[in-house]
Length: 88
Image (cartoon, rainbow, N blue to C red):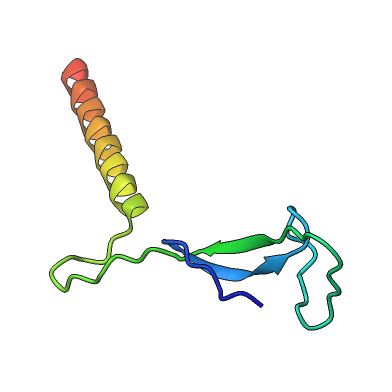
């Protein structure tokens, strides 16, 4: 059995007999009578940002959502102020 290969950003998840990675290769039970092509399965390693104690825990979607909410609130205030001026 060969050593596990290494690929930056991925962990090795095994050798497979098929390109679709559905048939794991069993080095203990497999009989080889000629050339064999095996396929490596790779699993992405999640990238996590280091925690910065000075940065609040606001997800990116929260920041975008907050900005959109602030714009909507500002538009509503301007709309109400415009309606008040028309009524006078």
